[in-house]
Amino acid sequence: MEAKNFIEDIINEELSSGVVSEVHTRFPPEPNGYLHIGHAKSLCLNFGTAKKYNGKCNLFFDDTNPSKEKTEFVEAIKADIEWLGFKWHEIHYASDFFDDIFALAVKLIKEGKAYVCDLSAEQIRETRGTLTEPGKESPYRNRSVEENLALFEDMKNGKFADGEKVLRAKIDMASPNINMRDPVIYRVLHATHHRTGDKWCIYPMYDYAHPICDSMQGVTHSLCTLEFEDHRPLYNWVVENTGVSHKPRQIEFARLNITNTVMSKRYLKKLVDENIVSGWDDPRMPTLTGLRARGIPAQALKNFCEAVGVAKANSEIESGYLEHFVREHLNTHAERAMAVVNPIKVVIENYEGEENLEFDMKPQDENGPKRSITFSKEIYISAEDFSDNPPPKYFRLKPDGMVRLKNAYIIKCERVEYADNGAIDKLICSYIPESKSGSDTSGIKVKGTIQWVNANDSIDVSIKKYDYLLNDAEYAGQDFNERFNYDSVKEFSGKAEKYLGEVSDGESFQLLRIGYYKKGSADGKTVLHEITSLKDTYKPAK
Image 1 (cartoon, rainbow, N blue to C red):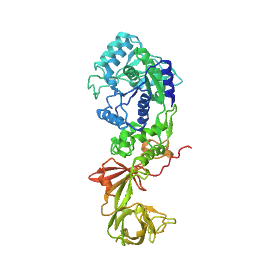
Image 2 (cartoon, rainbow, N blue to C red):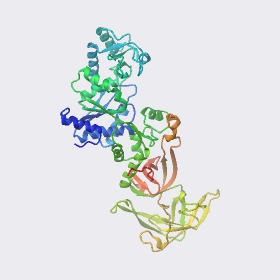
Image 3 (cartoon, rainbow, N blue to C red):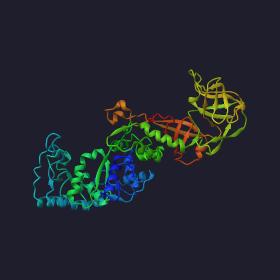
Image 4 (cartoon, helix red, strand yellow):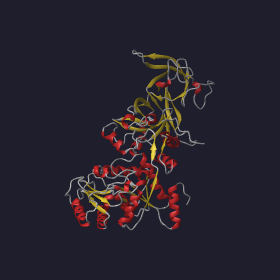
């Protein structure tokens, strides 16, 4: 089978040589928060690799840190995976294997490969050494097997406080890889677990539990991001020294980094906890639930991840690249509709009655659906489409100027009526009867075309436009607090054609000349959430 990345090169070689007979991956989130866009790459890789080779992909929850984990996060992760269209083979939790993980730790103690240490976390760090200097052995490293077994049992039975004792693997304090210098594999933690309750007061460390859980699930290829590359020798040590029957292989790939985007679950949690955003599903959030709330199509996100590809070195992707795929998908699939921002009323003084005009809902499809829109004497246009003091080369509506109304007629501004406060009250215009779109015989050419909505049956809407949560690269080196964009959401009043009031919440549209928007509602009012702008800033390589 043709490989499209280095991971598939490895798999193809192992399949052809008989090292493995099937491909079994797993997606291993910790349920301590909501998934973000960085996890989407791992999702697509793990589930996509299994699918390509007709293999299996498990959903595996690394729930070894009960102080931060919740069932809420478990359910949210399941929903995100289903939204992306992936189906797991089986669901497993690290907690499913706690008894086995504990038994294998006892086995390591009996074989002299693990010991109970009384040093504090700070003391362990101080004695671990540096990249150029070896670490110092713990004074408790040579405890007898019997003493270690008794102490480990006491740890399990709750006789020690948090941090009072740990279990460490006995490997090599002079190893050039600091991760191999007697790493902690169990710690005391008196916390109620979201699944096992208070059964345990000791919990395994990720680096110890992970390879055991992979093995017990039958995982063949444990795909993880580059920060775990230096941990691979420890992964292999655990597999070899615990004696698990199945031996998985860990392979690392570059994580996804995107400009202007928060890719830290810890900082995303901070934004939620401090009410800087409205929640994990705030449309500005790069969480999958936030992207879904904003209206990002699942397929566009998958197309983006596939285009980014799988590499061995970390890099940063321009945020415009994701928007390119969102825009590309919506341009094909989203219906067109009309709305106006900060509306100005237009009265067409020489028009009487009303008529139904044909509106092309999907002009990109020559056989696409059409619907009727109502045109009458009074309409609304966007405030930005009129200027009573226009700059040079201004092709929208202006005093004595003409403009075409999309799918309707050419109109001319005859005069402007102002309110007492000096604001524009309404525009008095005339229309050219012979200029009807599709049958124009007027011979008049205008350079501007603007959208509009009929005043009699339009609906009030709130239009929300979003910017990035983080300011751009010129702020590099500053922390998230300094880079946070506190002006990342703007809300405008608007009018929309009645059709947008009739369709279901969640539908996405291209609002002509405004952008791509998702329909929602709040407090009984229609809200249009910006998905992305019309302008594509990404320039693909030729």
